[in-house]
Image (cartoon, rainbow, N blue to C red; front, side, top):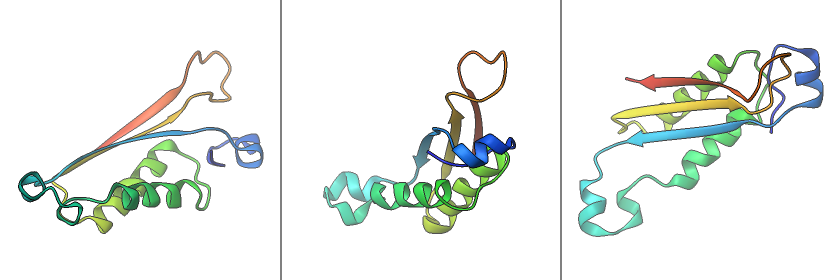
Length: 107
């Protein structure tokens, strides 16, 4: 849930959001060791996403996805690739059936 969007009611009332993250990194050590310290802590990734989603409101989904991507890149410099998808499942736009979504990829 968040208060992002261009319309006043989005900022005032808020709305549900969905976020999908795809991460790629060298997992060879974790594959061999079976130790959590040799891989990415998903709880930390989720915390970064939540921090952005509950942070200061932004107008565009593109900007929101970019902030999430930047936070993951800063927090996990060993990432080889990142995909961030941010979706409004119920946008307050007349005629839109279903949700709207943006996707950012790095690199």
